[in-house]
Length: 164
Image 1 (cartoon, rainbow, N blue to C red):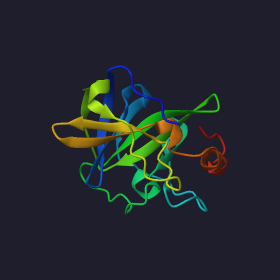
Image 2: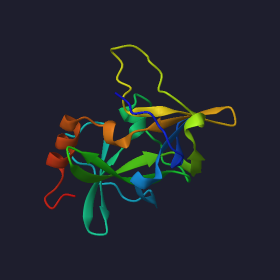
Image 3: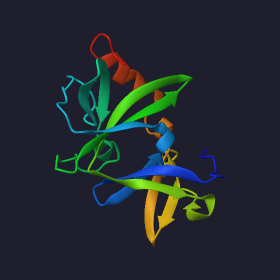
């Protein structure tokens, strides 16, 4: 069940295709230009591979593919948003491809609607809410809930030795 947003929070907004998404800036470590991504065999399509981030192996995800959209195409605006996610008391660092990073927004609870109820079969608990800025919707993601425990275990298990 999604928790309600009760205080003003800063969010990093970014584009995936035509849609605008946002994550809590507290979860964002850094934003990188797209660098060489090493493909890891037999991983899910949305796991694009790994990067070397100052000596650490960091998995890079394509959220467009994870959300059922076409894969991210590399452009001059493409970047990797490096985030910390928490799961079962552990913190993991991962990168997410974005078509472009927009801006840091400050949204109060009055600007955020609860996530849409789309039916029992569609999993939307990774959506914290729908932000509204200048008549545009921003899908606010709960990065700790985008990937299941099994998916996170698979990512870590598939990493080369000396993982994250």
